[in-house]
Structures are given as structure tokens and as C-alpha cells.
Amino acid sequence: MAVFSLTASDPSTFILMGIPGLEDAHIWISIPFSMFYIIGLLGNFTVLFVVGKEQTLHKPMYLLLCMLALTDISTLISIMPKALHIFWFNLKGITVGGCLTQMFFLHTVSIMHSAVLVTMAFDRYFAVCNPLRYASVITNVRIAKLGLVGLIRAVLLILPMPLLLSRLPFCANHTIPHTYCEHIAVAKISCGDITVNRMYGLVLAFVVIGLDLTLIALSYGLIIKAILRISSKKAHQKALNTCTAHICVMMMSYPPSLFSTLTHRFSKGIAPHIHIILSNLYFLIPPMLNPIIYGVKTKELRDKLGKYTFRR
Image (cartoon, rainbow, N blue to C red; front, side, top):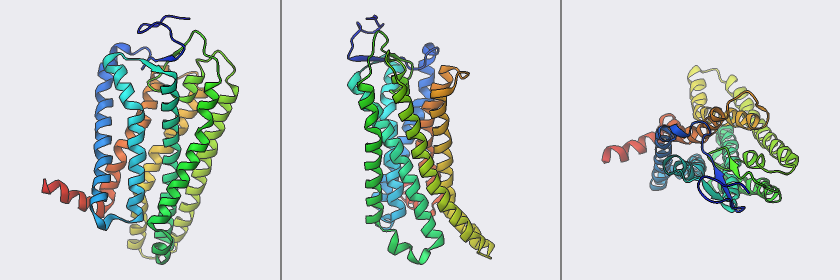
């Protein structure tokens, strides 16, 4: 067994290298990363606080915003504490159980995040296309049930990942060239056959993203069709404004997710440190910007937030 820089080789321990090739710059890289982390946590906890305190915001739309904020918070806390330990203290060791747990939690939250975006698309469909039925169809109870279904789906789809990894043999190489335990990054250091792991991860990514994007596209196709029937430009603008924030959040979520999935498996020309930095930014920037986008674009939430801000 090989000997690592931190501890003697231990078959129950992996070593997360952080950003290979940029070890000397870890402290400098940690500055923007930690800023994004803190801003993301503050923004999302603020959304949860304001919606929780204001009875007038106890509506399906804001329940969905809380669900989105919870997935964003979960994403941040699943990767950044360990990454900052690597950057600041050079603490690179992680137990195999801890690594598999982090991987399961992170990927489960990612699929749950996608389910929330699909539910938001249906919410917008009823708000624009069937406003008279909106209150009877889109209720807090129904949104909570859809959220539970999304969580169960995420757990069932991701559960095979750590189980498949736990069956792989890991020989001398326990060094993961990443800041967190990404599924394929862990599988690649195995000395066994990882074909099943590669295929499951790829099929899962395309099935989940493909299905969710299809449902979202269907919702927005019907929304656009309904908007085109409206003759008033003012009504056009109002209808589009109800969807702008959701569209912005989707554009920050799906394209980077597909990019990260494909480059992990097929890219040979992208330098590893570039790919790892982009992967981290994918998990940092959307959670930081999502509460800002909804805070700016949602007047009712903006007004309530302003009330608490100016009071202080």
C-alpha cells in the first residue's frame, strides 16, 4: 500500500487532493469560495426566515422557494466545509464511509433540486394558463406531497451509487483528485471494472435531466401558447414576469450540470484544475444567486425583506 503525505496508508481512508496543480494557491482560491459560501447561506436562510415569519407568504409559491432554499443550503454544506478544510488546514483525509455519505447526500440533493424546478414549472403553468383553478389545484398540501415524491425519487435513484462503489476494489491508489467525493471521480481510482458505474451515472443523468427538462419544456410550451393568445402587451409583460425568475434559475442549473456530467466522462482536453474549479462553482454560484434572483423579481418577497432590513 502507498504512503500518503498526511497519514500512513489506510484502506478505510481516501485522500481528497483539492485542486491538483494549484496546491500553492489553495488559500487564495478559498477567498472567493468562502465568500460565495457565506453569501449563499445568508441569502437562503434569509428566504426561509422571511417566509416563515410572514403569514401572508404561506402560499404554494413561497413553499416552493423554501424547498429550493433548503436544497441550496444542503448543497453548500455538503461540499464546502470539507473543501475549506483542505484549502485552509491541508486536512485531506476522509473515511470511505464519509466519502460515500457525502456523495450520496450531494447527488440526492441535486436530483431533489431538479424536482423542485419541475414543480415550479407546473406552478407557473397554472398561474398563467389556469388562474381560476390555481387556488384549488396548487395548494400547500399538494406542493408538500410533490416535494416528498421528489425526495423519494432522488433517494431511490441515488442509492445504487454508493452500493456499486462499495463493491469496487481500491488498491494502492486512494487519492481522489477533487475537492469532494464525486461519483465518477471516486470510481476512477478503483483498480476494478467501473463500466457499470459509468453507465449507471450517465444513464441516470440523462434520464433525470431529460425527463425533467421535457416536463419543464411542456409547461413552458403551454405557457407561451397561452401568452400568444393575449392581445394586451401589458398582460403579456405581466405573464412573462411571473416566469422570469424561474427561467433564470433553470439556466444556471441545467447547462452547467450537463457540462459537468459530460466532461467528467468524455473530456480529454480540459485541464483537471479547470474542470474541478468549474465543478465547484456550479455548486456555489446558483445557491448564492437564487435567493437574489427571487428577491429582486418577486415583489411580495422583496417588500417583506425590505421591512425586516429597514427595521434593523
